[in-house]
Length: 261
Image (cartoon, rainbow, N blue to C red; front, side):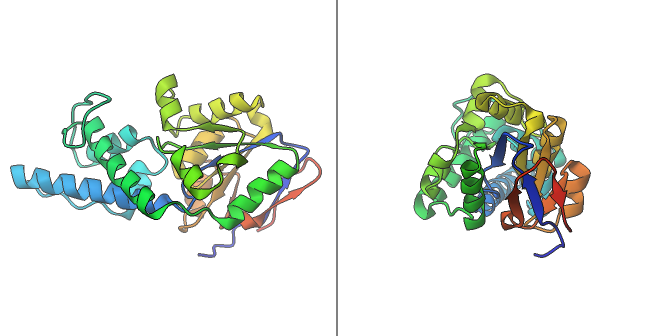
């Protein structure tokens, strides 16, 4: 989808690092996640309707964007169910997929997602890989972040795990007690692991919660990747610039960020 976004010149003298979101930015797995979320919620709502007789509208693309995109598994479950007036017990970390708790439903979603990834693998965006390689060649550090607890398996399946100096995923966030996006905690942790000041780091995100987190974290540049026609929403949520694809981001010497719509 072309929206007139970009191109953008990324000034290599102004920044020390670039922090990339994984799903939808580096790897073409956002649709896999969306399908897994839909399978989870439609199945659960149908089970609940069979017990109570209360029908709820099925999960759709707008629900994905508003309630789960870019968020941790538990935050996504909690947020979507709250939108339907449903509140479940939090449960325990090891709740099985058939347990009717926030963590149990999260386990169910993860089970389905892992099965698909093992069967189909993960495809990286060629333009994103090219940009990561160019960033590294220019001497800037790189990190990858994800709300997913599968952020180790996905880059390995896509063959890009060796392109990043640091990784902060859902498992790391859980162990450290980091809040999920739009809180900037995961981005700030990535910057800390790279040893860079957030003001001298770039965040690259495709989720509204993600660009908001980057802006709230005080990062020097927040690039929104708009693959679904949400450029204006991305700008309102904090993106400094928006591109349709990372092939529109070019590295240039100097210390000025230039956006050329």
